Length: 260
Image (cartoon, rainbow, N blue to C red; front, side, top):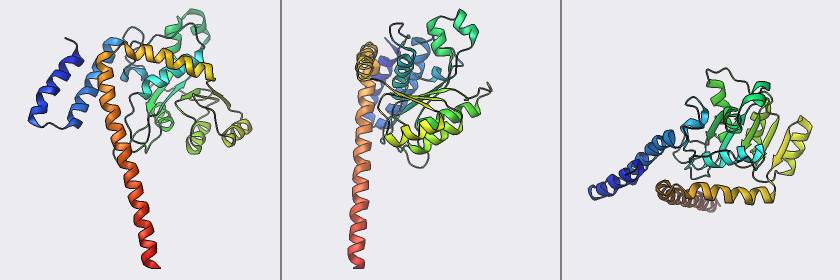
């Protein structure tokens, strides 16, 4: 019996004793981290920023570009984000050294150049995206003992950065930004002025990535069950946030009417 199935069996048993879903979720997330160590140990080094994520046995594809491989990694780690304001991921990739070009396999070449990998996270309220993935990735490098530099690195992000995150990436010396979706004109104009290369996946690249990832995730049946449960919980949180926002708006309108 796999580790995931064992935990799910324990969870079902403890439903009869009224244990909350949040505890179940924590058990599942802890187990996912354990599974990750086994599933992807053949390509991810223990000290890699990717080692804390479930990589689903991912291996870079030689049939697609380097940018597409890194965007696959971004979308894999994005699955670990469970915030109600949206799931985001960011990795920072350094330029290759000459000796790596000469002697490394593509698998090592791709994974070893990742110096940071992060999701968005909460600080003030559980479920809110208080710290964006780009800022968490930059912070990861700042706190690293490896003394890595973000100068001339490429940032791969789930979605185009907000203005503040774009400014943070620029200040850190990022020279390329790659995402899945097109950029706002204002962001492209600023990037052109600052000498930052901006790239987004083409429609064909976007569609082909969906096929690759669907196949990758479909091989992990146990974790897919847990991801569906997590997705339902995220949707519940997002609906709650919308209800809270609507309630605040109605309260504000009521207050203005009372003043009049």
